Amino acid sequence: VWQCRYSEFRCDSGQCRPRGWVCDNELDCPDGSDEKNCNRTCLTGEFQCGSSSQCIPLWQLCDGIAHCQDHSDENVDHCGSIRIPPCPGSFLCNSLVCINSTRVCNGVMDCEQGEDELNCERGIPTSPVPQRNGTMSSCSEYTCSNGRCITFIQVRTG
Image (cartoon, rainbow, N blue to C red; front, top):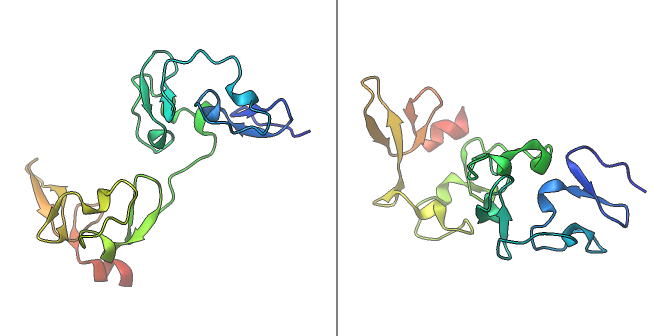
């Protein structure tokens, strides 16, 4: 029998699973106890936000961005210690997979949802960069946390 953390659900069979996996229409416990006694309003593949009937796609759960009005999709009770992995010098897909920056805007969808091919201008990834006057401009390569625009080669070489 496992000792579960506060952020985890204990299956009837004893295993621990993140609370966010309870009543998500997916059997995560070997005995299916994570799907018992669920008042379902969301479809398979959706997460029901805590204090409402709002439903979001499961891939948005614990992604570091609050999609539920009550922020329950990012709550520690659901996500536990899940953290977005760092991708220094790489591109972070919505699925939390890092891909090499050379694979961004190359005409091939490397991320599950194709976000590596969005916001591309002539095959070069663009991202808005805040300027001192409050306007936005595009950086054709990599934007540092201080807003400075550098080449991908500079990112890789430090």
